[in-house]
Length: 97
Ligand SMILES: [Zn+2]
Image 1 (cartoon, rainbow, N blue to C red):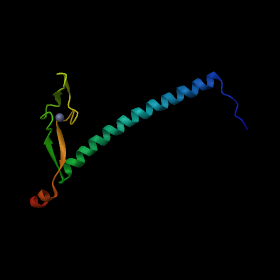
Image 2: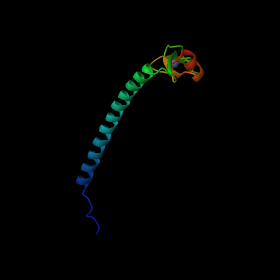
Image 3: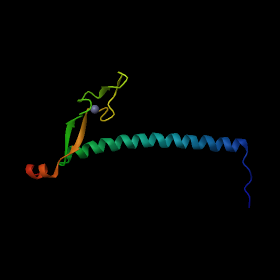
Image 4: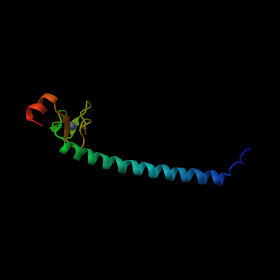
């Protein structure tokens, strides 16, 4: 059976509903990503396998000079100024961790 074609009002309503749903999903995704980053930070802090190091690209400043001479956000670490690095297995053994 062929479905009855939707009216312009029905299509507009469906379009607006999907737009609202999409916007809410984007908001939820941003919120979940923020929470994930916060938890990941705690995991790294508690893990003996990771060490916090100053970002080698911006030296912790979080801003670098672009090729055009403009100040731009460090693509490696922004906005933290540091990176979590995994220790070498050998040094973990030496440290007794
Ligand atoms: Zn950096």
